[in-house]
Image (cartoon, rainbow, N blue to C red):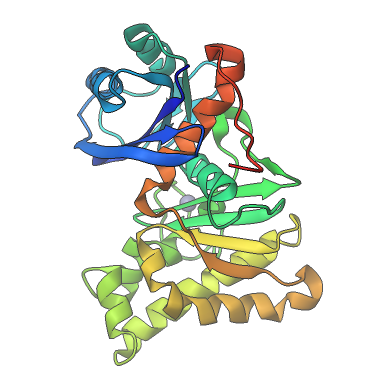
Length: 305
Ligand SMILES: [Zn+2]
């Protein structure tokens, strides 16, 4: 019986993949390729990865994409950051036809959440919030022991909660979303430096860099505190490229949360554990969940995985 599941994370510039052993929930092989310019080429390259990655012995395939997707049909809906004509592209059906494997397609931030919830920093928590701080700010919500997905897998976009409606213009078309304060791009811009890493490095000596880091941390803490008035959570998991600066962001995040503690309770702030693999691992986990209905496999025992 095949036990290997392929998880793929389609990003704006790079496609990362990981083969997960479903018995041990460990990554057995991983790799990456540049993201092609159109969905047909991407799908063909993913099929090639499926044939070679696990020695052709892949039981199921999960694919995370940076946008909205219909999880029932695997049709991509809204993908602002990939080149090519993606809306309406039947990614699951195309990949299923070329590989003969069951395929599930999901949002990449939801894939990150699933991985960190099932195997990473939020393991065992029924109520947790997730942020990926990178070029943009992705998010996710586990509430009452379920990962929120919603129509087109689009719920959980904490990065697009409005922090200040008079703030900078956001990629989503609105103003002052959390993303415009806490993304790598936003921190670098506010610090007047080329990268967020440079801002974190300069933060101890340069006032503009210090304020950019503080503003990012405050925006995260205040947004999460507001969210916790609606959704109970005792854990905030932070991943993504900017998470390397978490030691400097953390005091500002925790200060903002502490100001609302009487109202929302205590929220621990922790770093994501699965690193750059999280998106691919989460996509693989999503695929293992369809094996019972679509691929004749079995569902993992998550509690003991
Ligand atoms: Zn936005």
